[in-house]
Length: 616
Image 1 (cartoon, one colour):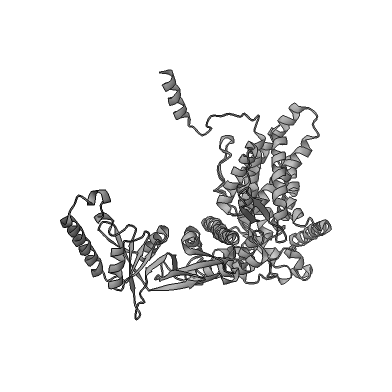
Image 2 (cartoon, rainbow, N blue to C red; image 1 turned 135 degrees about the vertical axis):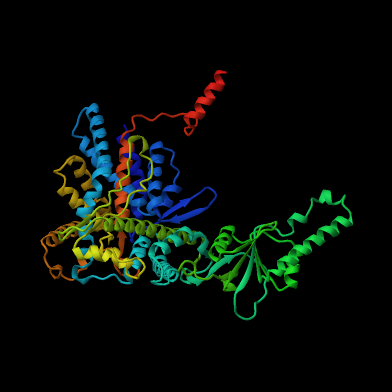
């Protein structure tokens, strides 16, 4: 029952996402009774927008969301691979005619898939995928236009937004990274972590403008209302007062109360307010940044003293500003913070005025902000979502690569020409904790040549970090390279251990590249056959000039609009396969579905307390 129900649910979800795969895929249109519409091709957004009432469907969505939380990638491929693997399992169980045999067989396969995920997947990818990943880019002297970073961003964009958006966002996001990292002055790990952790504060979305107006601005861009705007004269540091409360709030009483207090109380409160403002004036601040609206008295005081006031600022951006500038805390009520800026100016974008704040370098990082524009709110939301996902993907890649490189430095190098360094940080999963995120999955590292291991040990503090990722086999061409390599490796290893489960996984893994070429099935067969021929030549050590022009190694999947080759991280693809295997195990272990009206999230402790209360 669980196999048939799971296959029905996965097949229904497959029908939704299969038309959105690849750069030639379409978008899904969602409508509500209120007339609200949503057009998107982002896999995670599609799945979370669907109304899923079936418990199996909600279980699948939980697994997809857990995977997307780690890698920010592969939601549509997750559904395709899950449906294909369940279909292969059903075809295999059709050989058994008794229901009891089918149940025992599916349970056995579920345990075998979990064993592959925990014990064998690392080794299969380390020996069958990573050693040949870097060689795929060397066929015919193929080069990545714009570098590895541009190829990574372009590959991520191509399947999520339209061609025009991808052509605009790819160079803009690469420019943001390069400016924040100041090219080679900071480590890739720090730059990516900073952009990933603070993306919401660094991104300003502006609707009503064409996407081509998106650009990178030096400093921090704050959205708010300029209640008082005074141009600062000369150059030099600018002091900003950051407040999160109304400066006059503590001196205001309730209207019904102030009636009973006569003029002496009013005069005394105004005197105290003037004393506070006089102390603030001694700080020699030039601009007041407030997350709330200030009273007319404060605004008038600011005008008289030539202090600009920006109200209704985002509190998270103000906290980031204070952290980056090491703002001085003034122990008053309300709490005041004084930040020193390099400049403060009014920035006009479209019909809105923003604040552009110059921030000194922070830990070798140079502060820049991203301005994203789009003609409609829906397109703007897509741009913001996919841009945030880019840095989540890069964060996962850099963490996995650096973790593996640290382990390779701790392990002595092998005397053989091939250096194998395999990340053994497996996630100990049990049947009771199948729904936990596979956060421990990391990139496997294995150099195809001995020189690769030396190059990958270079410091990440230089501009060759992304090239080192390429040479170490951490990325592969998008469009089927990973699936072809893993299919071949699983087929070769199917005679060891649980051969049945490996054969089923090897067949299912080709579902993604097959669907990418569903409009030209002959091309997919030719592509696969040609890839296997090239792989045999690589194993034989033949020279790469025998591969011709090298266009065959690009698998027909290029960046939208630019015509350049795109790449994707091996660690994300490995995490995808592992997550699908765990999801299959979780689904096939379901014996029956029970419907209940009570809450399913109560702990055993609270349940026992309620039982005791009922008994008493």
